Image 1 (tube, helix red, strand yellow):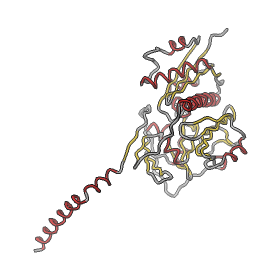
Image 2 (cartoon, rainbow, N blue to C red; image 1 turned 30 degrees about the vertical axis):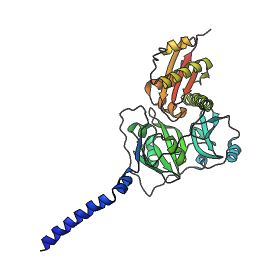
Image 3 (tube, helix red, strand yellow; image 1 turned 90 degrees about the horizontal axis):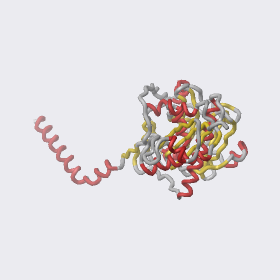
Image 4 (cartoon, rainbow, N blue to C red; image 1 turned 45 degrees about the horizontal axis):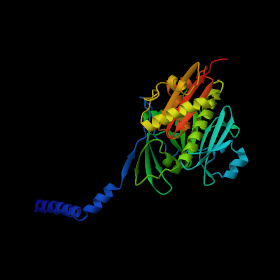
Length: 357
């Protein structure tokens, strides 16, 4: 008898589930279609192995006093650092205030609606070196880098960034207090190269890693052709400034800006973007030497670095620093001049040693 009741109960439960699915079919579809979208950045990759420590929930890392920036007002920045050397428009809605403080220190402060929302730092800042650590191991022990990082936007959106092995090795992401930090490492020295500090909405707007999310991601700003030209010129100058900071760090003379070479570099970035290829060889204009000749730029020695799909020029420089061939050009002792050309998300550096007169 008990067995008969049990069988009857199971049959009744089965028909209840079927009836529920039939009655609420549309709602069920809607629940499971609340978008779990996926976006992937196209970035170069190498096979590396990285050990990721499990986070200690009771441990919290914090900034030193001279590392606090997010939320500061324009006036507070001016009072501490003076007027910026220039102000560059970014592709993410904020303005970059540029402070090339010295040959071995560099700072860009992102200002939006009168407040700091992001900052890029390297070297001696406010009279002190960045104190979050020096080597990868030291910083990883503090921050505990993870392959998957969950970020909540100010409006409650949920995002999960997925870091590749290369990301973890070269530009891991960590939370410090209530803001996010990208740590850029020089993998040849295993030391910290620079940091980018961001409030959560800026990080989500940039989406520097592969990301999955629920709902609709925030729109990136749109720009006129003139505004894009301004953004591109700012990126080119930032690449030049930061490259020279890296050269000084390695005991090398800074490059001289070469305007005619920059034109050659810009035309190659534009050509790659508009014609959908990524190569040092242009289907229309040939090799690097051909493009120098076309631009009527004589040279004794020339070289080229290219990059695409990075969030900005600063990130592309850190990428070049960790690629053997590109690194050789950045730190080449015989190159004396540099031209930089940026078109949208394509970045070109052309290096030059002119004939000695």
